[in-house]
Amino acid sequence: MLHPKKALQLSYTLFSNPRVGKLSKENLPAVLQDTHKEIFEHDEHKFHTYTWKGNDTKILLVHGWESNSARWEKALPYLQKSGSTIIAIDAPAHGQTSGKEFNVPRYAEFINRAVKKFEPNIIIGHSIGGSACLYHQYLYPDTNIQKMVLLGAPSDLKTLLDNYIQMLSLNPKMFTHLEKHYLKNFNIELDYFSGAALAQQIKIEGIIAHDTNDTVVAFEEGKKIAANWEKGRFITTNNLGHSMHDETLYKEIYQFLFEK
Image (cartoon, rainbow, N blue to C red; front, side, top):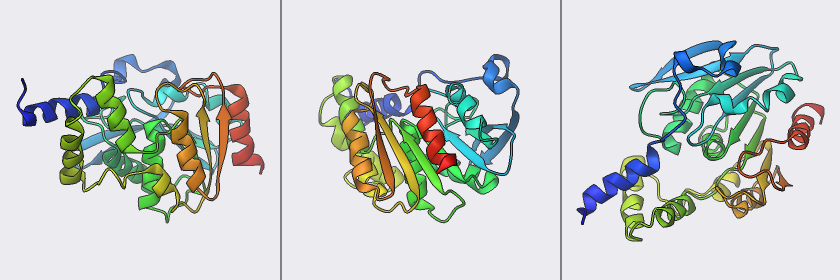
């Protein structure tokens, strides 16, 4: 039987260390090869961005867990119709970004560094990348960002941890240990780290899109965020799963961003 401290360390490592999603210069997907690449330093980390150059309107793309900037390949043709400059960021411990550990507070710091550099007008996040966008907008509301789109984003960190513990058949007591870990290391109380609560503070316009058949992040999570975001519009999709790749959805997002 593992000592509680060792069990906590193992559980947090499993929860925060992505198993896939890393990239190297030698194995860059084609969609990322013909981009302007930059490396930024934040604390001891180096994170990577990829830019498809366009006009003065700028869109920042924020991917989710065990993914990387190449996940936006199917969305790019729709966004590029606007002529916008598009920037994608590799999350902590994902893509070409350094590190082994991922968490939302750190991701929000990376996002803020990119926001200061590129001054985007629009931010789009998928899955937990959407949660990080929401958290960033809550922490730093005074930016150039005017519109935000969240795709399949979880609301409550507590729910994510609960699901994770059940999925790995861990001792339910592990939740209490993980909760204390987040409070000690990130000054976050899980009861208060809620996308629904954060959304109440968001003043910009946005879209929350979620699929009824999402088996990774429950549909109810998206509904929680939408119900508390005054200027957020909820879009329900069917049979797209968690990836949310769909021509109809992308056209609706384009209309919201550029034709309203």
